[in-house]
Image (cartoon, rainbow, N blue to C red):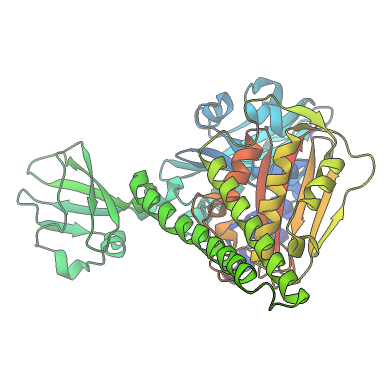
Length: 485
């Protein structure tokens, strides 16, 4: 007998999500709540939504038996990504037909049934919605497939309204809906100028109509990058409109974040020069004080100077480690992953943390945790970065909890703080190189924006994944998932 849908629960739950969106709380929180509603109404074992960007897909929301997959990447050349981005928009699959990362990671070794529907807007795919069912139970019925297709369309609508989505800063819907659009004549005078063009350039439609387009144009069918006076970059493309006349359509977008590494290099040099100079200056100052005034200093003063030198030397060592890691293979040093005891490695890593940070940490690692596959030496780097980040974005002396656990697929480490919490639209941007949040005490703990970038790089090279999410009641949860050894 086919399984049935609880339409009453679906309608009530979806109404609550709509009210949530209308009240201003959208993005990832609304998406997660919608998945929970749909999972319950459909009787699914788990739900997941994969957002697709030009660089590939990533699980940005997950519930039930696949909640652990949050943050898992899906490259564009993966066979399952190719399968999801082509073929029927909605379908039912047996997971043994999936041969790439999705089939292997979302479902593990157990064969399952999956309902899939792409979320599309204007022919552009923004993601795919998945409902998982054990293969041993009844097959989903047609009305459940319709529900998945409907919910995928609702999610696409959230993207279309720019309600906190996409979480990838370069997500496809940004290009699809936020591109500037102009139509120009043979003299390159503007005949049409859409609202996004005004937003991107700052030129109102009344200022540009019948005037020369305010940037150079590439030949039809080509693209060029143009730097605006304020330092931002536009990528401009053009093409001829069909029919009589000589009109051209011009599209353009802000690609400042995608510009070559010369800009990144300048930022890197500026920030790291400051970070290097600060601890070196402090170390030199206290060392000179000890050298020049040793006899005049009390034992307490000498002890304080030695303590400050040690603290700043630790900061310097961590920065050098980040810089070396950012230019080399992270974590592994070329050695293959091997099974190791997660609890032992965590306890050892905590002892290596700076004293002030270590005093704030409570570690919970239950007995009997399964062994994990990876590089135990790199775990110290991962934990240091996550705990340092938690300390930076939470009040001084507030507690930080480190919790380890496991489920049927992976072992996990969660680092939880009591800060103001990460904004939902920043849960992916936080892993970008050089990106830093807009809160925290920069004087107390400055940063180059490399920590979380390196954490993700290290973890994913060991077939794991890392994600961030706001904590209910305030604070942020950073979660690392590693495969069983």
